[in-house]
Amino acid sequence: MHGRHLLAALALATSLALGACGVGADEGGSGARAINWYAFNEPGGSYQMAVDNCNEQANGRYTINYVKLPNIADQQRELLVRRLAAEDDDIDLASLDVIWTSEFAQAEWILPWEGERRSAAEEGKLEGPLDTVRYQDQIWAIPHTSNTQLLWYRKDRVDPPPDDFTWDEMIDQAVENGTAVEVQAAQYEGLVVWINALIAGAGGQIVNEQGEAAVDESAQRAAEIESKLANSPAAPPGMSTNREDQGRQGFEAERADYQVNYSFIYASAEAIEGFQDKIGWARYPRTDEDKPSRPPLGGFNIAVSAYSNNPDLAFEAAECLASPENQALSAELGGLPPTTESVYDNPKVQEAFPFADLMRESIDNAAPRPVTPAYSDISLAIQKTYHPPDGVDPDGIVEQLRDRIDKAAEGKIF
Image (cartoon, rainbow, N blue to C red; front, top):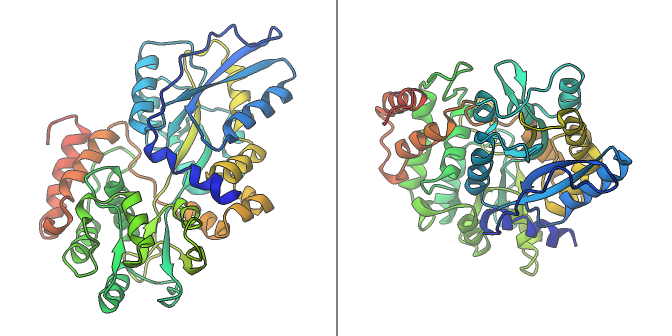
C-alpha cells in the first residue's frame, strides 16, 4: 500500500493536471469564514485529509478550501504570481516551492511570521527547511514538506559506501565495474540542484546573505567532478539530457550500480519483482573527503498572502495544515518527507520510509539553493555555465560563473 502511495508522488514531476478556479471567500459553510489554500494536487490524498482534519478542529471558526494548482512547478508559480501581483484577495494561503520564498517576500506578496507565530513556524523544524523560509532576518512561511536526494546503490553488486565516500571514489568504482553513475544533468533545475550540492559540499556558496555573488574555487571543484563523470566510461547514456526519471530507469535497467535521486525511486522499484531488495541507501556523496556532504534540498512551505481578508485565521490554518500529525499523513500517503524532526519517529513514517533516519539527517544538513529574489535568473546562469557536462572546462569557470551571477543579481542579460 505504501509503495503505491509513494509511487503516486512521481506524478508531481509529470502530471499536467489543470488548476482549479478560485473559491469565493464567503463559501465556508455554516457561516464560517473561508480560508483558501492554493496548493498542488497531491495525488495521495494527504492534503485533503489535512484540510478535513483542520476544518473539524476549527469547530466553525473557519473552513479551509483546498484550491488545487497544476502539478508542474512553473505553472504553479505563474498562477500565484499573476494573482498576487494583481492583489487578488481570493488567496489566503499559498504553498510555495522552497526556492520562491525570497522572491515573494521581497515583492511583499506574503506576510512575515512574527512573535509567537514565528516561534510556531520554527518549533521542532529541521535546519535545512528553516533555511528556506528565512530572508532578511525574518521568517516568511511555515515549513511544510521537504525532500532530499540519497545515494542509492546496488547492495548485491557493490559494498556499502563508507561515511566519507566521495564522488571521485564513486566514479572510479563505477569505471572499474563497467557500470554507470546516474545523475540529473539536463539543462534544467535538476542540474542546478546537483551543482549547488557539489559547491556547498566543498564549503562554498553561490550567493551570500546579501544576494551578491560569492563564487570561489568550490565552483571549479564542482566542475571537475561533473567533467570527470561526463567524460568517463561511467557517464550514463544521454547524460546531458537525463532528468530524475531517466536516472530511475537506468538504475532499474541495471546499467548502474550508483544513483543520486529522490525517494520515489524506491517505491518505483516495488513494481519489479525482487528489485527493491537489491537497493541500498547512503548519504549523498562528498565533494571533498574531509568535508561532510551537503545534500540537495526541496519541498514546499505554506505562506500567508498579504492580501488575505482574514490573515489571523490564515496563520492559524497554516499552523494546523503543517502540524506534525498532518505532516505524517503527507509522508505516509504522499511520499513527502516531513520538515518537523519528531515526525520521523512516527511508526507509519518509518514504515513508509525505511530510510527515514537517513532522510532526516540529510534534510537537516542539506544545502538550500541560493536564497535570493533573483533566483530564477541565477538558476539560468548556473545552467548555462555547467552545460553541456562533457564540454565544461573547470579552468576559468570561477570567473565565468561569478560574472554571470553578478549580472543575474542585477537583472542584466548574461
